[in-house]
Image (tube, rainbow, N blue to C red; front, side, top):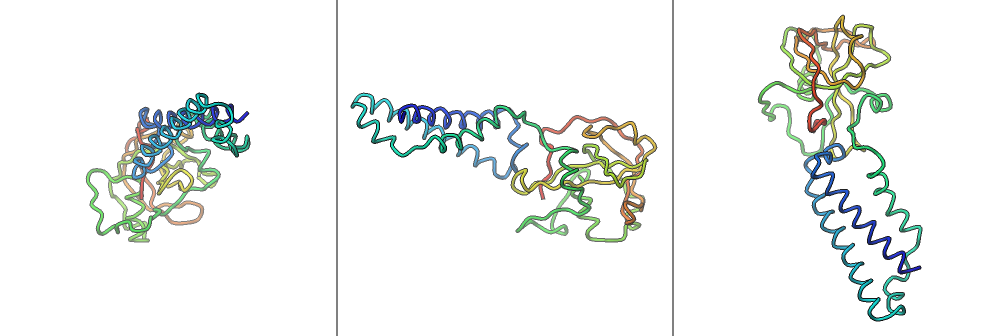
Length: 244
């Protein structure tokens, strides 16, 4: 039985290494963690592969010396431990890789302020080149709480459609998820869009919105609202998340 457990451990460790490697190579690793920590996944591939190869080597070595020494090398490994190790591998194989979307916003809520991480630079220090994304705009709003101060400013953002139960009939959110470390700490952020075409856009569809800001209302609160000049369907970005 110990031999079988060791074989399973080697298979699971090797499988985890291959799973991490596949997430790196197919570009879906960014669906799970902040890009800043991608290097840790490379380290994990090396460590898991090394552990799997070590177990294979011990099996081969023990087989050559007899069952007694093999038992000594593998003693103490429980089936429960093997099962716990198998859980992330099974989830990685059975659950399709996809980013968080509108259904996750329903459980977490939409944020009207930009999340911050410890040690991040201030808005005054942050240089934005090109169109501002949703987080950039929320940081600007935090600097000036008067929504009317942004009236007429041009907006050019990409995000997925989300409908909050508190939305008016002609309102949708153009949304993104912001993650500091991984999807466990993800928070949904968005800009409110006021358009007579709101009913034409389905939750989770990605859109490219260009227009101007005007002071508006959401759930009894005064907020900047995008009055769009144009809303086009968009492809989901290779990296769908934003980072504080």
